[in-house]
View 1 (cartoon, one colour):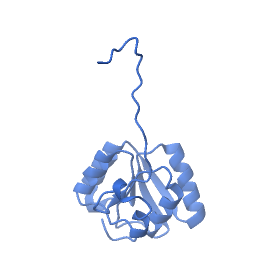
View 2 (cartoon, helix red, strand yellow):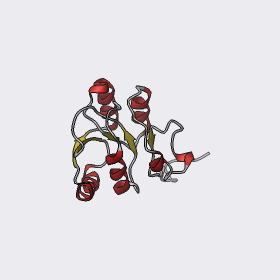
View 3 (cartoon, one colour):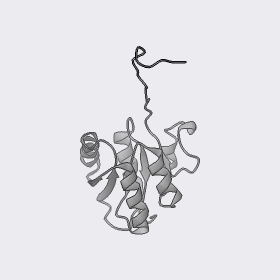
Length: 146
């Protein structure tokens, strides 16, 4: 999955850089004026990113919505024949699955350089562009701590 240039992906990332986890796939189908994104992010927010990206670049984006594990498994099953140009997910196991299958193209160095090294993999095959916190909240009257 390495036959297409990733310049369009950099534009999508610029639109969404504040909040999205991004991985680059490359397909052998499609044209320079359209991309297919396998999207495991919140669809309503992603549609806003897509609209802004298309307005700025003129590149049509087709979203294939699904869960991160299902889309990761689909990418691996499709292999080099996948129509996916980008994989957006917020969970690293799905990214690791696809990366370990050797299906990610290199992310442009200028894009990688926008993210501190400690927040991206050494492979340069994907990069995180957002952080989130997971919080455990409990009722201390019902759950005792030690």
